[in-house]
Image (cartoon, rainbow over the protein chains, first blue to last red):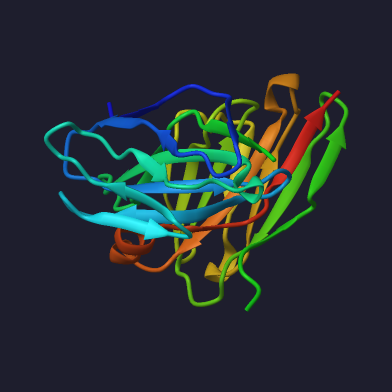
Length: 115
Length: 117
């Protein structure tokens, strides 16, 4: 079945450090790819997305490029801030037989940024 | 429009009791989803509605679980005879039509955290 594998955390970085969170996927079709962020005590917020190969999603200084040849969608940010501390989820979406476009999530990577 | 609303935010219940959660989606979204998130894991799909029709259910949705979406507006998720393994965050999400999901993803609510003691 479809699956998403992302690097295990927790990840602890100093403020202004470079961030990479690896994400690879397995899918039977041609998925859309997403990164969601979950701050403590809150639901998930869409961070960025890409719908086709070589698309680059970007938002709030975060970027990820849809790499079909390596089935990857790694999240990067050049300079992290304390406010970026959260759990990050990589996800894919494929249409199901019932037309539901289910999201399949990775297990999440907890990022802590220290001053 | 304030996004997807879920009620209650937290629920503590004794094993064997029934619980019901409510979700109010974004008003123009015709698709509604329920997901379950256990500690340290990503959310897992439970069920999907298009308008009032429940079109898909996960194998995770045992016969103790039932979901409804009367009139295609708000939705409820009921768990009967709760078990400790039901302790989780229950997330509701809504979206526009299919292409809306592919292009924009879902909008999630803040979730209902259930603790079964």
